[in-house]
Image (cartoon, rainbow, N blue to C red; front, side, top):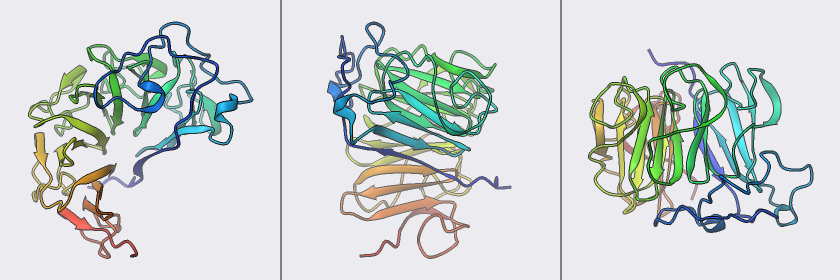
Amino acid sequence: MRPANLALSCALWVAACLPEPWVPPVTVCTGPRCPPTDGGAADARSDAPPDVAADAPPASCRGQNLRGLASGIGEFGCAIRCEGSVWCWGANRYGSLGDGTTTSRATPAPVHDLGGPATSLAVGFHHACAVVGGAARCWGHNGDGQVGGGAGPDQPRPRTVTGLGRPVVSLAVGGTHTCALLDDGSVWCWGGNRNGQLGDGTNVARLAPGAVRQLGGAAAALVAGQYHSCARMVDGEVRCWGSNALGPLGDGSTTRRLTPTAVQGLDGTAALLSAGDFHTCAALTDGRARCWGAGSTGELGTGAFDDSPVPATVLLPP
């Protein structure tokens, strides 16, 4: 039975801006996939700015106060302000807002104890993660170990995910799992794995990060749905793994995959990637958008209300 929640997972990244007056003391992310903003992810273990920005943003942030915005497949959203603080709002019964409480909020509240300025952000069903100083810092629901550091209890404040070994570039957060893209292009995942969404060749939950097997090269970006994950490779190919009952892996089947499988018939090079609960979309370099997976509510944008196990063209206006 398909769950009722069909909210899209999306992220919007706005113009880069320089924090002021803080200057990163050490650059730790040096690989080809490090974020270009501010010279890469900076080490925030010392000389870091406060978690919460002053009421007036730094002069360099005026007119561009948000660095990033994310809403997931759950009931809350988060934003990164220009200077790197993270603010969240919405449902909070599992500590998803990271403010140290379980009180839901209709207006943004600052994430406490973030540990420094965030450079990237991902929001899932009931948990969220940010990249801080090249590390993954996660908070919220932790029933399957998706926050890192072991299963339960829930974490209403951020904690660092250990065992990654290299700087984190970006994160993808699903229903009960989390994946990290490292600066060498490898992908590591942890948390719930009943549908193979960790890509490690098993369906056993992981309380510590494990490498995605048979990735087939270096990844450039990650997305996660409720029970599946996908990577956009540096060559523009898309590879997905996990639950495939409604076709969100795009390999032409509805067979669950415990390791990455290539999306079939993409008919172009992917420039951007996005995932919903049970479907996935790619924006191609030629300007087209292609989606696959669950389509019973029209989420594939093809003009039909049908599922598609292979990419179908979104009917965007010319």
